[in-house]
Image (tube, rainbow, N blue to C red; front, side, top):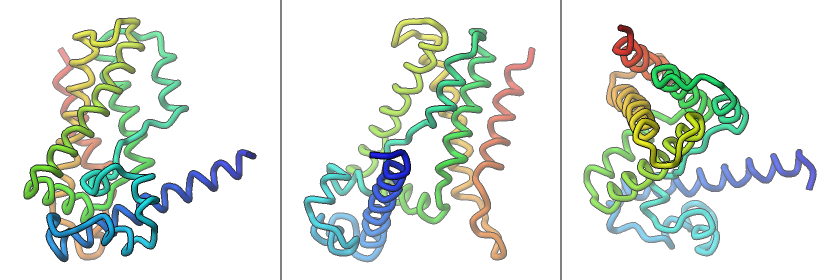
Length: 205
């Protein structure tokens, strides 16, 4: 398989996953999540039941549409830095997370719908929290590698938790903030960068 063929296949997989995700959200809003079945989602997304399960293990996972991923080049750059001072590692981590957000910017209405479903349905909330936990463990392990520490290192775990908490705070404020009629889909980067600037201000002696 050539690089172009691999890129095309990846784009198609992303497009199919997104179709399934959007169909799940739409049906959950129309019928209530408990009344939505995998067969309904598959039909609405134009895929087979088997294809659905190739992408998502449950309908809750289709709502969340995770896990998130970090670009390989940005991850390599983060790991290659010799700096091991925790405040600097935290700054570099937030830049890495911003890079991921820049490449995978959420839709405001979709994010609101996901949050609303998580608030209304315990199974969706449990899946969302599990997705957060999986990504946080990945980030903590990455930070530990940067520090030259063992997985599970307390400092690495704390750096990951603080950085991700700031990211989530910024995204939540953006999702629930007012959207102008002329520009309803303002990038979340502005709000998240503002939140991270506040965080880094706390680190100044």
